[in-house]
Amino acid sequence: MFVIGYEAGSNNAMAGLYHLARLNDRWFRLDEALDVAYQLGLPVDGRYVSGCLLEFQIYIQGGRSAWVWFQELLGVTPPPSQVQKYAVNCSLFQETFGECPDGADDETVRRYVRAYIMMLLGTQLFADKSGNRVHIRWLPYVARLEEMGTYSWGSAALAWLYRCMCRVANRHVVKLAGPLQLLQSWIFWRFPLFRPAGYETFSWPLASRWSGYNPSGSEKGPRVQMWRLRIDRLQDREFIWMPYSSPDVLQVVHPEALEHRHMALWRSVTSLIYFAVIEWHQIDRVLPQFGGVQPVRVPP
Image (cartoon, rainbow, N blue to C red; front, side, top):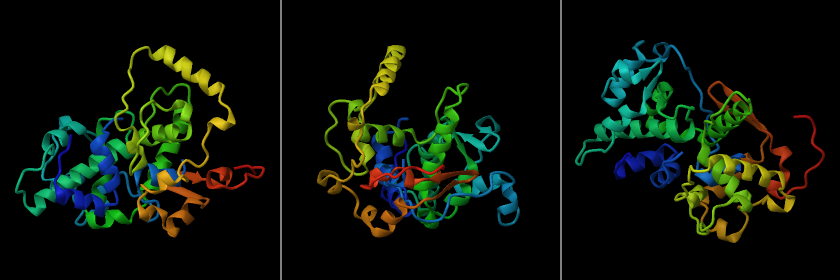
């Protein structure tokens, strides 16, 4: 568990990840841009999230090694036992940056914030199947904290979720990576039949509604069979096309999410970019989610 103070929280707000950080404080377990904005409170307009994945030194001022840059930004050099290619074990972050000391100077606070944001991105939004490593692709981003709020974190997270769901459709793949709390909350909000009982109150971001949900791992096989049967028997009336349109929901939505510039993006047919992952945001194929009438779909 990461414990950060007011200054770190302010930096998360500047980075555009404040609402996700608040959600993370309550729920540290682990489809459309509209859903990402409402469920996780992430910005969907801004610069695309991309960059180099190899040969970092080419893009670092002075041609320094990526690990020298890591030490300059975070104040530590990970030992070889904690490194796997370009990823660092989460245990290093947890042990080194578990709690920001009282009275820390500004530079120390910024180092803890960088570590916290890298953990937030690497384990919540863009997790791999291991779930215990953080890639150093985020170094160029945390090096410029004041610019992090200019990126479209929501569309990048959605691109990664789409790609992970595509991969898990392969029968040889047994684990699903990506922002799974987004996927689970999307299911619970739109399929009342699948919701756990007793979670009627909600706040912002909307995924926090399920923050106390922790299903039992017992009888996994029978539960999977039961849910498959329920999915097979689903009726069209058991899906909520517009769960965010009710007054109860709108009154807790952050005002910025309702600005016209965001709503225009939700209705855009465009590409979603996350480094080498590019997926299409084909909103024209789900018009009922915006109160429209769905025409006959053309080939994607």
